[in-house]
Amino acid sequence: MKILTFKELTFEQQNRFTEIVAATKTQDTEKVLKSLNIQENDLPVLCTMLRELMDNFELFDTLSEQATDDEYEEYFEKLANLLHSAFQHLSGSLKTLQYLLAFTQSQKHNDIPSDYGYHQLFANGGVEAISLLKQAIADMSSEENPYGIYFCFDAWESIIQEKPEYHSDYIEFLFNILRKYEWHNDEYNAFILSYALNFSPKLSLDYIDLIREVFAEERVLLGICGDLEDAEIKLGLRTERATPKPNYNELRYLGSSFDDMLNPEPSLMNNLLSQYHQEYAVKEKPQPVYQKAEIRTEPKIGRNDPCPCGSGKKYKKCCGA
Image (tube, rainbow, N blue to C red; front, side, top):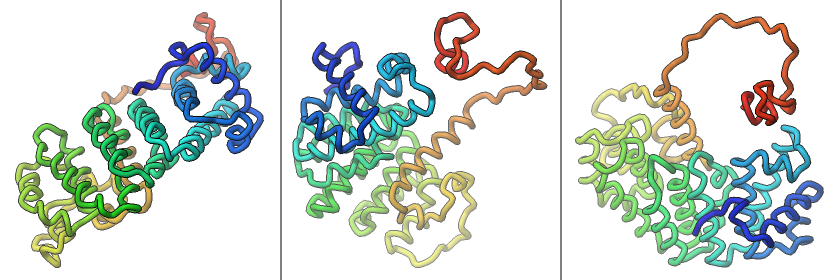
């Protein structure tokens, strides 16, 4: 299943798109759902709306009559909540979950699904929903779409909270991924291990040989999952460290201890992933050579003013982006 662009929608869907945008401008989420009678066949339109809001500013400027920055942020918030409410309203349908996963897979550089708690919409799912999650994880790259993969893990855990019988299958799935640690980067391996140890130290104990192997091969980031002694303490194999606790440089990403990491507050894992990627991107990017700032003598260009480069676009959508 694919999330379409605005141009790929049918004529009827484009009209529905415009209708929902107009309603969202003047009504709250619940009124939009009721007044427009949002149904399952509206999900492709709603998913397209939120994606276009992030990727196609000019389209939303046109539909919203040249929105200001504040109006844009308001639209974004409303539409994100509307999509969540629509998914929640229709969550009994397996097709709804398929659209939700397709939307998640399309968000390669954005954590909207986790920020808005979309993973919790899987809570009432069963074996069919888990099959969807397994396939989605297999289809996604841990490097290209880390948010999508971790969303799937969170969604699976939401199901287990309601249906504990799927607990062991989840842990087995995580460690089957970890068995292929040579195929993945060290960051991904560390997060997989952290998810497993956090969710069930008891079941994870069955995989102690594999856990020791990935540490021996140095294929995990210690700043994310701690070292082997930390893991063994979590598993109940030791009560205290035999060596002084290392000062992992990467622990600056956590802002907390290893035990806090394995017993996180809600959404800590997603915040942690976001912080790590931001830090990593800055660290890897060539640092600029700073020059003495020039003193501006001409009037400041407004965000909604025409760009002085002559492109015909607004400054905020061109050189001021």
